[in-house]
Image (tube, rainbow, N blue to C red):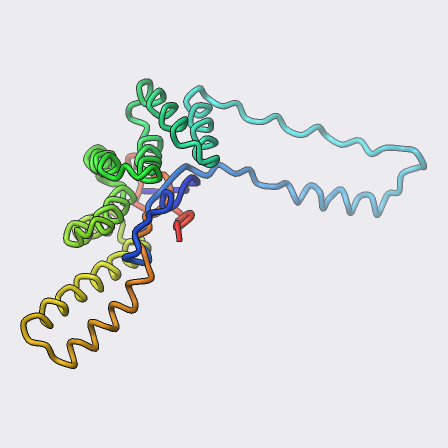
Length: 246
């Protein structure tokens, strides 16, 4: 799977939980145009070598026309603008209209899950990301966002399993390793707490306090980049991580 870039919410989005530091969600595909700096530099050199007469104007080529968008791309752009403006109700309406026409659009489906997270509708977001893992099992991002939601609900075993699936799908998905470390730390903290109830010791108490101090100020934050379905023959590769929601 190729490198996938997604520009939308972060972490989807900000998850209000204060449990972990790096479990993050994902959002829209970044389609940024590259600046034509080389052309500008060339014109600067030319003007220095060949001075124009007073009142004369340099003749430059007109800028290239902007590429035309397909109806699907135009709809995606409209959705992204609504999400970026935090108009989540309007975005959700537009997303549902879009998916009636393009039900296999993984990016917009992912964005729908992120918007639901922003709106605090986590149970519905879990359904969206779960369906994505079933329809596009090669994508690691939906698994990562599921882990963020499970961690927020205190279901750390489910979060661990989701992150391990993300890593199996993409061994280079760095954020999933970081999130998995946080999950292991939380599971270790719970194990120490159970040990203290059964047989308190200074050693276990000190370790539990250390983990508590490390985890308490932090919160789960899902990744915020929208995934793209893997094309045949492509290797699974993680996209750039967008806003973390921190």
